[in-house]
Length: 338
Ligand code: SF4
Image (cartoon, rainbow, N blue to C red; front, side, top):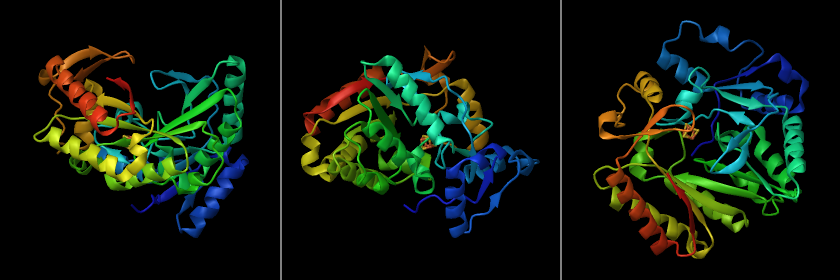
């Protein structure tokens, strides 16, 4: 798919002290993207919720991340950190709808050297244990990598770490700049995949399945540790056939790599009451099933209830994927089903 080009870039005052800001501004000028040294907030007055959301999703803000205390990121990694917050994708079910309810724009943190220095501190403190970091918990940084180059720099940083490892996940195929750099097997790239039906229905402005699978084959050829997150898994008419077709497609695209040691993370569809409210405002015609009566209520780690499939359906999903992953990817590991 065409790479994301924002409609405008705002530059916060603090960002003016960092080189990456000027690298991005130069690219923006070549692409005729307006660069605005002003407050984003001033420009969103009087917009409706949907207008605000759509304007934000086409906006990049260059800013600085001063947060030094990292959150944990179980079960995926020890800690999470961010080079970007938000994403140009507009997946209707995205949990960032809630987390970034009032800030759905894409914020690029230009103080990358400070961020990586902080990571170095965490790695050094935990030596000789290996510390793992998730890079994509509040964003999809690959979606804007052609503008930032931040993921490549971070992969190279981790390539020199004896005691640190990086993980990231994406719904985009923008990986070419990562293929010929030294990663030293310290970075694992996972692709979030779903059936064509789910991608077309809910994952707007992300790359199609085939492009994600082709990107996965490329990173495997470049010897990256690679995995897949199948999420969110939905039950709908024909779901088993569609998900099996997706796995066959993946198997065919990967060729011999389908027998390598891939990992799979499996996450069933869920929503919270807070996300339901926001989704209905932003996507009033959504086809997502947001009826809590059809769901099992489970206490979530972030202090509110989430609604998942009832036990019987959830077990059916689990059994389906455990059987089929064994069939098509015999040497793979399922890291978790949740
Ligand atoms: S691509 Fe990922 S981060 Fe972006 S909207 Fe979709 S689910 Fe959210």
